[in-house]
Image 1: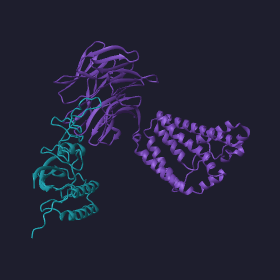
Image 2 (image 1 turned 90 degrees about the vertical axis):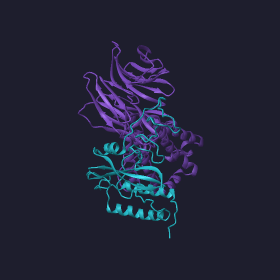
Image 3 (image 1 turned 30 degrees about the vertical axis):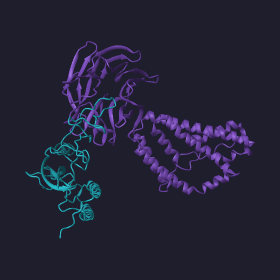
Image 4 (image 1 turned 180 degrees about the vertical axis):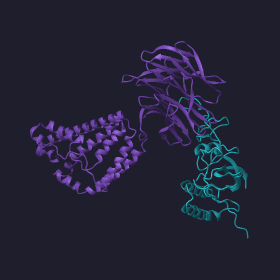
Length: 205
Length: 435
């Protein structure tokens, strides 16, 4: 007998993600109580979600599709470290390109206002483009003082009806962004998972 | 003292009212004067640390009112001189009583709130608003003279009923002090900033005078030591240097003696902007379709030197020129940095660099350099040193918002002047923060 195929409630997903993101952020070391709390949340939230989830949909700790505990890479909208194919930041909700200040930008990199026009300063001049750099190599590198970061392994999950690619930002560091011991994950060549990001493909699942 | 303001003492109901009015006016005026003095003192001293100290004091006072700690308050345990009402005419003793109680220092202090208010007025560092707030204290004192008479024939009985509620009053006072502490700690002035001008941006300071641009297309010079503002219409991007002012208009950049408006030099071109002036040197940006260049012109002999060339959309921004040093920012999609160059030796160094933040609009004064560091969800005002060996960078202020940011900076007289910009409305104000 097939289990009922019910679509998950997006409101429930968002609330669970927000709550678990808050919990993940506040746990800098994977203490016993941190693990216990995260697991309890996953069970409590997961059991509610599981009843309404299609098979193969992913449970999550702080990102849909991310079932481990490594924190997100620093990004304009932490902990939602959404990236494009080349590792540059995207707006977590709309998926549109953003600069490092979190502003929506056009193809030339100019920041846009709410109406889609290029943003102007108080002197009515168009603001020049601000930096827009890669979340793994540049953002995390500068924030954490690491120079050996690389995007390496990834895995795929179905999230919100589309395939999400979860990406490891890998380093030779034996400590991960959470502050505790790092795991190999899908990294190779001696690197270990330092932090995670994600790319939404848009392909239906 | 309350029973002083009765017909029995004053002579008639009419005289009683006159006495109460005189008392009220004097109490309010004295309290306002006290607030004015405290606000002025705060302004002169700079409010940077005073706001947080006032918040801490409020918390300690709240603990005292709640009975958690005990310590004596500075006060004069005295009543108003009773003999005055026998020896002096009514206007004199009524105003004397009003002044004595309105000042707050000269009588008994049942609670510590008065001293927290004094600390708050110092921290506010704005004389007129502090005077207004303290006038309410004087009004409160006056209300205690008027109110009991309205409640009962015997005013002292009314006060005694009030004192029986002392416990509840102390608890309410403690809660109010906690609320004050929170508000003080969260206040924008907790960063130590004082509002200097509204609807203004691009501050430039020199010799105690301040110049800025306004959104309606004027440049205003506020002279040192007071005096009327000097206004230049259809102008923007001011750069002040002693008696000289450089600004931009539709024809190019003009350098004038701002007090007399006499023009002494100009750069006639529609492609120039963002002047910085240290006579006889004028730094400015020249933008053509292919390059953006930072040029320094010697206004005495007319020679030009190009110090930086970049290709758009890389941006150089508003330069700073002081003490023979030139500072500017370089911002591209890959990184931004603050650069400092000695015009005498030609030695250049990068003061700050980031692949994440937008570092922009440096200002120079003495041994210090300030700039804006824009991040996602926050904007910081940073302060560093011009000496290469001194690398420590301090954060003067931070605004945590996506809707507001720092825009341009100026420095002088021990302060950093910064423009705060609200993105949605375009509104700007200039604030001053102590170094």
